[in-house]
Each structure stands twice: as structure tokens, then as C-alpha cells.
Length: 218
Length: 314
Image 1 (cartoon, rainbow over the protein chains, first blue to last red):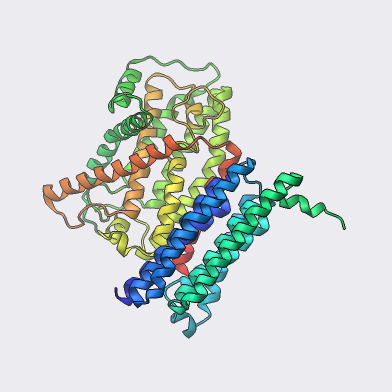
Image 2 (image 1 turned 135 degrees about the horizontal axis):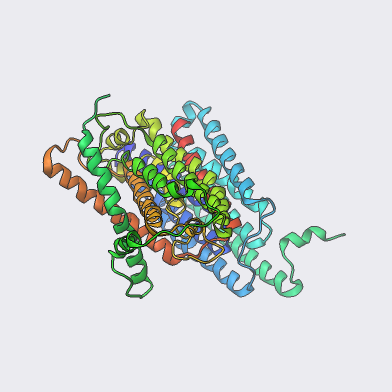
């Protein structure tokens, strides 16, 4: 594949990643958010495979495969199971109206594009729009974590944020050392497991959610 | 600007859209029925409905003014005029300047406005309800559609639909830029809203408080109702034609003569079938959204369209 093609494909994947992120931000049901984050991870895996094919970096193939298996299949499945086990309300109730979050989304995306346009020579060394899209995904993941009340939707935000960092790292460095990527993935798995167990425990003992912890007094 | 579509071709395309509109609705209903394991009515059922309505007499509310009687004709005329602006058989600007995509959206908005005015004029409770709801949804859908059009027009340097389609040429997904994907995503989100289908509106109900478009038609009867129904069929096929003109190649640009036109017609039919299948799938797999959830759903389309335009400019 020529550099031009890779450039275009990464750009296109970036647009689709942004679309999945908008779906996560606007998701009215928790299952939709989970499916959207699974689709997002799948697109990250595809991006990894494209970069692997273009750079000939064997590590990237492994990373794409691991991403596909762990982030696009296993973690959404875990989240899905937790939602089923908890028997919670499936409708998502954010702290601020979704319309406001969507407006913030536009601001964040435009800002990150503007930011990376000022980078000049450094920016041109990076494949396509990977940097602004990655920054936008990371910040929007944080936005989702900040605006959601339940721990599960906050987990979805965390995964989206992590996807953003992963995408940027992959595109900027043309593949980080395998050991680091594996470490990151293991971190994510651990975080997901710890959070899933914690959510289930909190639920079963005090029947409260993260938003209720605000009212704790020391 | 001299174009390669003579006036006769434009008129032919307009007639074709008017004639094929009910067929698309019939196809969507048939597909929906098959997806739900029903036999369903034949694809020609909308034509039979129209023929039946045309034979019936007209009943009108006592409170309705003279405007009410002319509303169906005006709505159909506005929609049919919009149909003349969509390239069907061949891409490229028309030989005579007719209007551009902004004009097309304006005509569709005019038809929507007239429908709402007619519903209010008749004085029925359902009509007023439907009109109020329709006018709440319209300002959410139309600007977003406009943004999608602009995001394509920025590259082509024109808002003329035929020229836009010719600029897009025969490029397929690999040649698409990032903004095209976001634009298409926005368009697919907005498509059910503009064609009055689930999850925004339900075209199959007549006596529910949830309905938007059907509620406004309740007071019409006979040939007037036939005009309104034909106008909504045409509106649907025009919207689908807009999508295919903006995002998919509209047949050979230089395809002169009958073979080129036939090829264009075949391509257009294939595109309509794909979009109709999409609409049928969405209708069968989603429930209608609660009315106050709609801004959230349409907001997704709006943000996607805005970002598509943003990606073009930034």
C-alpha cells in the first residue's frame, strides 16, 4: 500500500471513529453505548491492521489481533453480562442534557483539529488526521465519564478514552514496542474487571450507584 | 452555465419520480411485511389506494376556509417542482437553470408548511396536534440536511445537484474522504425523519396521538387526500434521490443516447432498492422514539453533518 492510500484509509477510519464516539455520547440506552464502543474498538483494530500492512511491523499485527479479541469482543461482553446481572434501568440519564453534551462534542472536535493544525512540521509527520481524532476521542471519553451517573456508562467512557490514546499512539509512533502495548491492554482488562466486580459488590450490598456517593459525609 | 440535460430529459425525470414514488413505498411495505414474517400487500398497493381515493367524493369540515381545498394541489405542486431538481438518469447540470439543492430543500419545506397550514385550517384536534409536532421536528431536520448538502458543495464549488453528482462522478468508497463518511452517516440518521418513518414518525398508524404526518392528513378526503398521499410518496423518492445524487454516482456523465440513459435508470433503481431496504430494516428493528427523545436522535445527525462540514473546512 502506498503512503497516500494509508493516509486516506486512516482519515476515513478516523471519521468512522468520530461517528461511533457521537453515538456513545448520544446513546439513550446502555446497550447501545456498549455496542458503539465495541464497534469503535473494532475500527481501532482495523486501523492497527492497516498500519501493520503498510509499515511491515509484525508487532502491530499482534496488537491488532489482541485489540480485536479483548476490546472488541471480551470487554463489551463483560459489560453486557454486568448489565444483565445488575438488572438496572437500561435508559441512560446523564447529568446535563444530551443536546448540551452534543454541542460540547462539536466544540471539542473542532478544538482538537484546530490544535493539531498549529503543530506544523510535527503534525505533518503523523499519518492523516490521526492526532486530532485521537485527542478528540480521548477528551470525549472523559466528557462521557463526567456526564454519566452510573458506573457502567462511565466505564464505557473510559474505554472510549483509552481507544483514543491507543489510536494516537499507534498512528504517531508507527507501532510502539509490543511489551508496552500488551501492558496497556492488560491494564485495561484489569481496570474493567476491578470496576465490574466493584460495581456488582456496591450494588449488592448498599443498592446505590456512583452518583449517590456524592452525598457521603465523613 | 450550459448543461448536458435538456429540458425534455428533466421533465421526463420528474414524471418518472412522480410515477415511481408509490412503487418505492409499496416496496418498503412489502419488504417490511416479509421481514416480519407476514405476506403483506403487493408492491402495487399504493397505486390501488390512489386510484380508489381519486374515485371518491370530497367531504370537508364546516370550519375549513377556501384555502383548505387548494392545499393538496399546492403541496403536490411544490413537491413535484422539487422532483424536477433531482438528477435521475444522468448527472450534470440541466440546460436551463432551474434551481439548486437549497431550492429543493426550500420547496420541500414549503410543502411541509402548507400541509401544516391545511391541517390547522380544518380545525380538527388531531390536525393541530400533528402540525405542531411536525413543525417541531422540521427545524431540527432541515438545517442538518442543509449542512450535509453544504459539506458536499464546498468541494464541488456549486450547489446545483446535477453538477454535484457529476463532480462526485463514479467515485466509490475507496475514493471517499473522511467528511463523506460523516456526511453519509448524518444523512442515514436524518433519512427516516425526512421520509416520515420510524423512529421519528409512524406512517402506518392513523389514530394514535404519536403520529406526525398522518395526523395532518386526517381532514382531507377523496382526490385531495390522493394528492397529499402522492405528495408524500414523491417527497420520499425525492429525498432518496437527493441521497443518491449527493453520495453515489448518478450513472454515466457523458452517457449519450438511449443506452446511457437506460444504464442510468438501472443504476438509479438499484440505489433506490438499497435505500428502501435500509429504511425497511430500520423500520422493522426499531420502535418509534418518544417525542421528547427526538431532539437527541436528530442531534446525532446534526452533529455528524456539522463535523462533516468542519472536516472539509479545517
